[in-house]
Image (cartoon, rainbow, N blue to C red; front, top):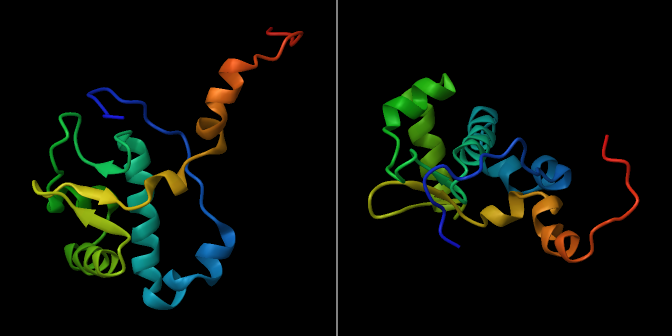
Length: 128
C-alpha cells in the first residue's frame, strides 16, 4: 500500500510495556535516547505515512527541524539515530527520509481488525 499526500495521521500508537521496560532498548540506549526514540515513533504516527518521518510530499525533514521540533540538542538526535540504525530500528531511504522498521508492530488492533469489522458490521447498536 502506497501512502499518499494527506494520508491519515494517527491519534496514538502501541507501545509494548514489557518491550519498553525490559527489552533491549533498556540497556542499548541511555534514558534521553529512549525518550527520543519514543518521540520518533510518535512523529512517524503524526506524519501518517506508514512509518516514514517526512513532509506531505514524502520529502525528508531537515535534521535541524527535527531537533528543534522535538526540543532536543542536535547531538542527541544524531546519537539516537545512529544507535537506532545500528540496532535496525530505523533505516534511511535514499533521499534521507527516516523510516521506522517494523512500523506495523506499532499500529493499533483497530487497523488490523478493520477488514473483519467491514465484513461483519455490528447491528442493533445505538448510533446517537
